Length: 369
Ligand SMILES: Cc1cc2nc3c(=O)[nH]c(=O)nc-3n(C[C@H](O)[C@H](O)[C@H](O)COP(=O)(O)OP(=O)(O)OC[C@H]3O[C@@H](n4cnc5c(N)ncnc54)[C@H](O)[C@@H]3O)c2cc1C
Ligand SMILES: NC(=O)c1ccc[n+]([C@@H]2O[C@H](COP(=O)([O-])OP(=O)(O)OC[C@H]3O[C@@H](n4cnc5c(N)ncnc54)[C@H](OP(=O)(O)O)[C@@H]3O)[C@@H](O)[C@H]2O)c1
Image 1 (tube, rainbow, N blue to C red):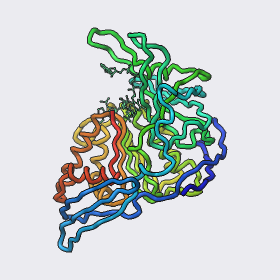
Image 2 (cartoon, rainbow, N blue to C red):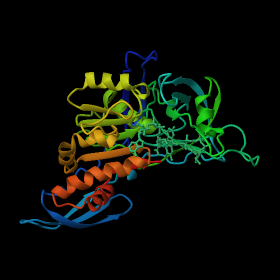
Image 3 (cartoon, helix red, strand yellow):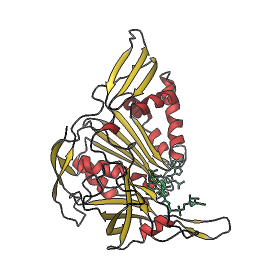
Image 4 (cartoon, rainbow, N blue to C red):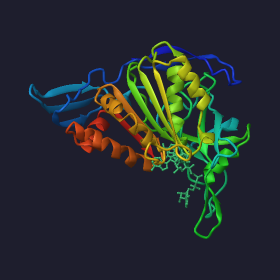
C-alpha cells in the first residue's frame, strides 16, 4: 500500500539554508508490530526463516510457565519502495557538489568534511543507506577508479527538505606507508577537495542493514565512531528536525559517539539542539578518547562510555522494541561485545547466541569497516 506524505524540515538555527516542503511516498506499515520478549532468567532456543515478505521466528523459551511462541514479523528489508542499485558503475548518476565544509577543528587529528550533492530526486534513498562514489581519474594501471561506499548522512528528504540532494560525511584518509611516504586515499581526498559546482559520479543507493525501524515508539541505540555518525545524523534529522504525516518519533533515541578529540566531535551543535527540542526522547553521550578517561584511568572509547550505563543498556536490550545500530571502525564491535558478554552472563544468557537472535530480529544492526 502506498500513501503520500508531506514533509517539512525545520533546520537548526545555525544553518543558513532555507526550509521547504516536499512530497514523497512512503509505506506506513510498522515493523515487527508483534515481537517476542525473552523473560529474565530464561533459556531459549529458536529458529528463524525468512520468506518473501515475512520473517517467521519460532522460539522455545524455557521458564516455569514456558510455552513455544510463534510470531509472524515483517522485515524492514521487505518494505516496498526501497530502491537498491538504481545507478551502477556503467550507468552512474552525475550530480554536482552544492557545498563542502570542513566540520572538524583545525587542531583535530585528521579532517572530516560534510558535503551536499544534487540528485534532482533521481537517487531515491532511505535513511541508513549508502551511495557509491567513483572518483575522477584513473588508477596506476590506467583503468577508471573503482567505486568507494559512503554512508548517507542526510535524511531521505535531504538537508534542504526538497528530496533533491544527498549528503556525506567523509574523513580525508592520509597515512604514512612502510617506506615513510605520505599516501593520500584516492576517493576521500577527491571528495574532501571537491569544489561547489564540480561533478560527482554516484552509484546506488545501496544497503538495507542500517534501515531505521518504522516503529515511532522504538528505543533506538546508535553507536558511532568518527564518520560512522553518518547514518545516525540521517535518522536523527528525521526524528527531530522534520515533520512527517505518518511518522512522529515518540520513543527513545540514544546516541553514543566516539571521537579522538573535542575538536573532532561531529555535528555536535545539531545534536545539542535536538536534545533541547526533545529532552525526553533523546539522550546524547560522547566518548572523547584522547581527552577523557574512566574512573580507572582507561581511555574513553565508546564501549567505555557505554559501560557506565551497562545495567540500563542491558535492560533496554531485553525489550522487544529496542534496536541497536553500530557504525564506524571495525574494532568497536569487539569492544562492545566484551561488555555485553558479562552483562548477559549475569542473567545466565550467552551473549553471542542472544546477539544472533537479535540480529535475526533486526534488533542488532552493524555496518563497520
Ligand atoms: C558501507 C561503507 C560505508 C562507508 N561510509 C563511509 C563514510 O560515511 N565516511 C567515510 O569517510 N568513509 C566511509 N567508508 C570508507 C570509504 O568507503 C573508503 O574506504 C575510505 O574513504 C577510503 O577510501 P580512499 O579511496 O580515500 O582510500 P584508498 O585509496 O582506497 O586507500 C585505502 C587503502 O589504504 C590503505 N590504508 C589505509 N589506512 C592505512 C594506514 N593507516 N596504514 C597503511 N595503509 C593504510 C589500505 O590498504 C586501504 O585499503 C565506508 C565504507 C563502507 C564499506
Ligand atoms: N558503514 C561503514 O562501514 C562506515 C561508515 C562510516 C565510516 N566508516 C569507517 O569508519 C572509520 C571511522 O574513522 P574516522 O577516522 O572517521 O574516526 P575517528 O575520527 O578517528 O574516530 C574514531 C574513534 O574511535 C576510537 N577507536 C579506535 N579504536 C577503537 C576501538 N577498538 N573501539 C572503539 N573505539 C575505537 C578512536 O580512538 P583513538 O584514535 O584515540 O584510538 C576515535 O576516538 C573509518 O575507517 C571509515 O572509513 C565505515
